[in-house]
Length: 131
Image 1: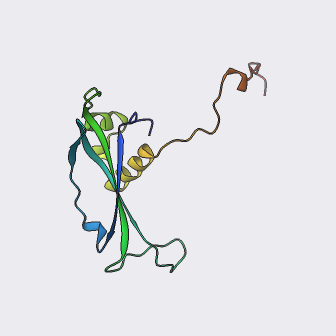
Image 2: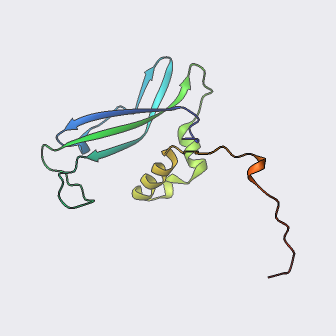
Image 3: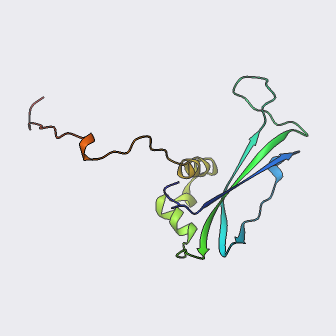
C-alpha cells in the first residue's frame, strides 16, 4: 500500500472453528517498532457448494489475515494512525460496512506493470471553442 509507506505487516493464521470470534492483539512490539492493528480479514474455505458463495459451518476452516501498521519505533517518525485515517476520510461518520470497504481499497497493494516517462506521452493541441 502506497499510503502506509512500507509500514504494513501482514499476519495470516489458518484456523478451524469459528474464525469470526478470533480476537487479535490491538498492538504489539517487534524489533524495536510498535505495530497497531488496522484491519482484520476473515476468509472461509469454500465447501464447493454454490458458485461464488462461501458458507461458514461449525468446525469449518478459514484464514484470518491481520493487517498491522508500524506507528513508531526504530527508524520511523511517529505516525498517528487514527489522525492519518481521519485525514483521508471521515471514518467516524461512516457505517461499519463503508469503513470496511474503504479500508480494503486503502490497504490493497497497487501494481505498476510499466514505468512511464516523458516519452510515453504526447502533447495534443486543442482548439478552444471547436466541437
